[in-house]
Amino acid sequence: DAGVIQSPRHEVTEMGQEVTLRCKPISGHDYLFWYRQTMMRGLELLIYFNNNVPIDDSGMPEDRFSAKMPNASFSTLKIQPSEPRDSAVYFCASSLGSSSGNTIYFGEGSWLTVV
Amino acid sequence: QKEVEQNSGPLSVPEGAIASLNCTYSDRGSQSFFWYRQYSGKSPELIMFIYSNGDKEDGRFTAQLNKASQYVSLLIRDSQPSDSATYLCAVGRYGSSNTGKLIFGQGTTLQVKP
Image (cartoon, rainbow over the protein chains, first blue to last red):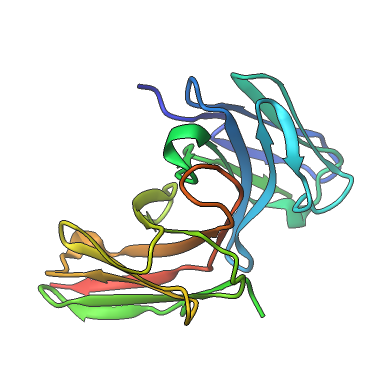
């Protein structure tokens, strides 16, 4: 079984540019999570979806961040405009709520550097 | 007060020893508790989860939960150098029948010296 697939794996961009991170959850999973990890703040939940509907976006840092899930197999996290403090590893994760409870599985992450 | 707290370490133990990792949480309504392992440059991977008070064993790993004290721990017996990683404690509001967000601690770095 393929795991959670994220792209790009690495991105370096200039301040002010738009960044789009992509995620394909594990097939059949009905929950999708976007996390951000930095040395200072650790692993923070940004937003999560259930059946493609955003449930909790209280972790989204500001209006520059937006996330969508147009269908069960695809989600995007967009940063516009990007700033150096957005540099972090962004993880997408998914879960099958009905059988595995809160067990979530992470993708390999998208390493973002904003210069 | 952080929602989930862990000592950042590093915790250093000799090979073959027992490593003890601890975690406290602030939300008394929490019902699910997880330990993830994260190697440098990699994504977190699930080691085990626990929902009920007491101990749960899986191979060399034992998770311990005390809801009254709001305390979770992970014991690693016969520690190996390959266990050297950051261990993340995660806490969820819901039990096994539902999924909600998980709040992660900062992680404890474990070093197992040969």
